[in-house]
Length: 81
Image (cartoon, rainbow, N blue to C red; front, side):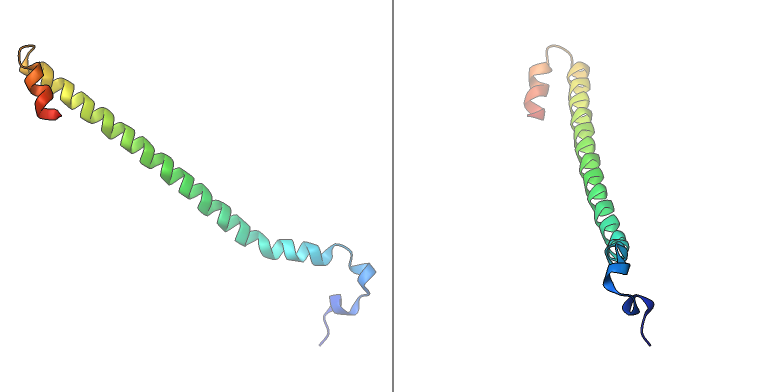
């Protein structure tokens, strides 16, 4: 059985073959772009988590230094270094 497109002369086909290629390729390109977006988002989340943990460590060190008092602040710095 011959397809309708195979029976038409080439000048009458016009942009149909190109359109068909784009339609077949679209899901693949969309998936690749979604994967790239997810990788960028995961990297951004990891960076934010690292920043948040760094701030938490800094605040914990500061609260320890304040709890020990001004005389023991140098000792607290040596413990956390």
